[in-house]
Image (cartoon, rainbow, N blue to C red; front, top):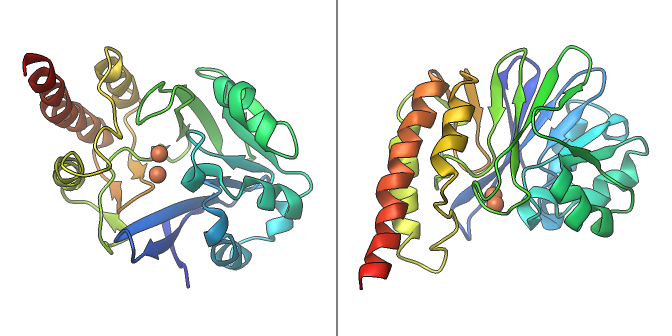
Length: 248
Ligand SMILES: [Fe+2]
Ligand SMILES: [Fe+2]
């Protein structure tokens, strides 16, 4: 059964642990006049996530289904949600809508431009385009301005059956996970591009209070510093890998 925790006011983390990957897959429901689900999740996890959502809101009333980039853990079950929630719309980047989602989904998506906002009642979300960060040229994140929660997808990725919310070192965990991953088949999951540092700088200026991570614990604390520290980790681990390839 999925675990539900309220990580910020009316912001619920619905977590499903995959023993195969030793990895949590987290979906976030924001309970508001127009309920918003961030991460539609895998199709295989839909029954479990739906059952959890039912404990919080009527799933048929979900209005927005948002996600970072076109990948199965982000939006594989999108059509299942669109089928049970007749007023629901996907909300993703303009690129995501035009390139993938409008072809894949049973109804067209609302494509969000950089800085565009979406109000769900008491909460207002700002879309931040983050092309190739964590991956995919359609990638973006959502910043909830009322409680300063950043829904940051695969950023701060870490493994294990960890606590829902931590106030300790989430960047150290992300560094360890990324270092591990770079030695295996998932190496290269996060590219280091000429825009990586400036994208993280711009997210840091939002000064998030909570980082809602897709894989691993959410973080409450100084989100600006965590994003600054993540920038150093990515530069150290990923730009070094590029240098060693080109110098070899
Ligand atoms: Fe991803
Ligand atoms: Fe993911």
